[in-house]
Image (cartoon, rainbow, N blue to C red; front, side, top):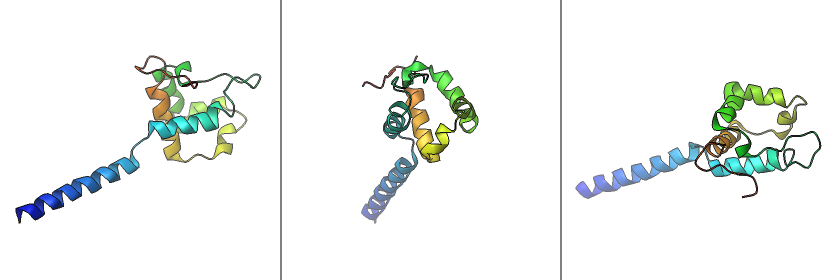
Length: 115
């Protein structure tokens, strides 16, 4: 009886941890999406009149400011609707936000896109 209870609880903990990880924010996925849709597409410094942007371009607080209120300020900067064309899911935006805020200027691991 005791052995069945231990097996049941172990299985339950394993299932719950997998379920939590499925819904968790992923910085690694955020890094891939940021590089693909933001950095390489526009903000790599290759296009004239478009700012070169990396996670360490702005501080953590500045990144949080841009992502407040459903990215209202980020959308305001991209006046030509560039953000509408990439069609990212809300989870992808959360992943990008996690990557940028965790690697922004002033963090313990500021990062540029050359890494």
